[in-house]
Amino acid sequence: MNDIETTVVELKSRLDAGRDVQIVDVREMWEYAIAHLDGSILLPMHELSSRLGELDPTRATVIVCHHGIRSLHAALALRGRGFVDVRSLRGGIERWATEIDPTMPHY
Image (cartoon, rainbow, N blue to C red; front, side, top):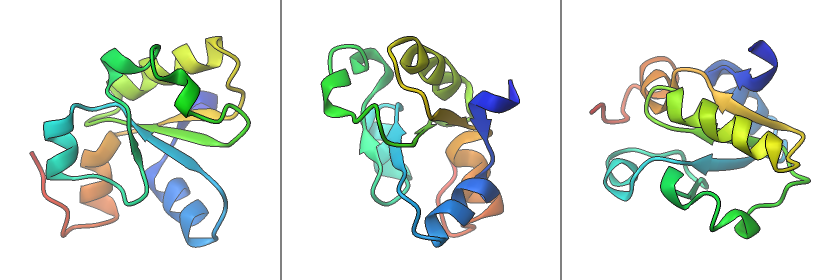
């Protein structure tokens, strides 16, 4: 499954380099309110199919959730809908808070 996942270090490098990436957070609003990546689009998992038109299928996309399970399912679903460059953030926002931004709240 390595081709469908990216690490927090890889995403951070991509962002630091100024490379274009569409970050889609599939958690619930209450989770997003606790901790999220700046510039991410909140699109809860249960709304994904009905709001698909809000996303650009031509842009590199990273899907984020709490631990990486929902985002993996969402990434697979988006690939099935024609998104080519879409990946799930392995370990989710929890791993980001642990490895990249220790000031980010855990829940």
